Image (cartoon, rainbow, N blue to C red; front, side, top):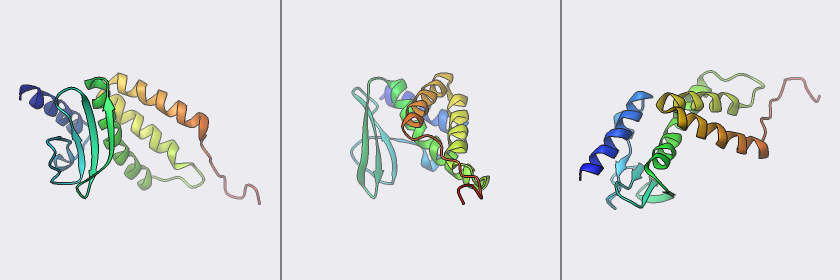
Length: 140
């Protein structure tokens, strides 16, 4: 039970630090899904799942607690990043530029290693799917 509390407390601290509302904090996975959101295991083997309408839409197995913390906060910070990008969108710019930048800053604020892991993830993604900025009038 103590471990449940310390993991939940750590995740709550992360959420609070980047402004996630308390009703969206991850919950301990006890097999009962009372609301949409992220549920996590409090004992090994570690994992987290995303639940929508009572159904697991994704489940991620993790090797360690830090991997679980990073995965959960990456999901939650993405939601913040897409909303911020939408408010400050720049015409002709691939929206992922701002989303990636915002999300990187959020994750780095939580833990420097989270920022480093995120940069690695993004480098891999951009190798396959590079930014695609479109300047108005180009190609006409």
